[in-house]
Image 1 (cartoon, rainbow, N blue to C red):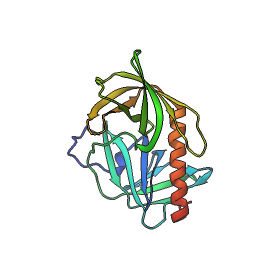
Image 2 (spheres, rainbow, N blue to C red):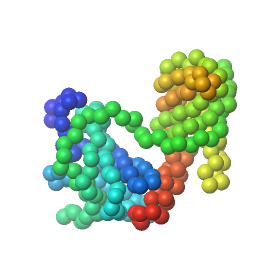
Image 3 (cartoon, rainbow, N blue to C red):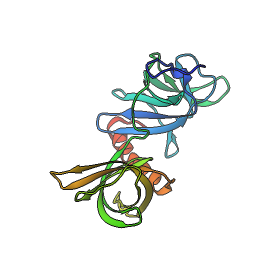
Image 4 (spheres, one colour):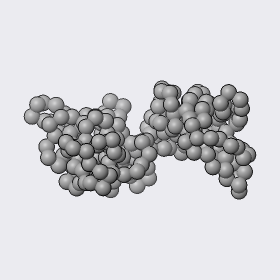
Length: 227
């Protein structure tokens, strides 16, 4: 398959490897990760079954908005999904089959969805300065925080962040290392907003994001009987 430009349309069948499924309900938005399987029918994509706490998730609830994000030729593509069914293939494997007849274009989108947090933390900037901060949002790949005062934080500055979450009594410190991708001073709040891309794998951060998603999934389950 030859390389396509950002303005070309793509079929869902061109996706391979890892994908993200974004599920929007009336009150919450969740993300699931899965892997594309081989030999999908045209206009469909077979993926590894998505589970939660040992149960396979059903996506038959009315009112859900489903989108799938993957990569084709190094470009991120988002597909609007018609439906997702749990099926047994001819080879005997149980899969989630994603139906999408409409081609899609390249998008500009963060690699991971961010979740609001709003807890306290500390930031070590380089090896020089340590400051208290507010951790506004997190994702599997990044952290957004605010530090009081006007700071000059260059792009690619190394930061080490300690997050002090309080999620259902879980107050374990989460340590993250990364580099700044943006820094903007908010004069009205006298605060510097900093966006950080995580550069080292942090199982603690992934666990925290997963716990936040679990709380949101419980809300969807309560309202829509998703599971």
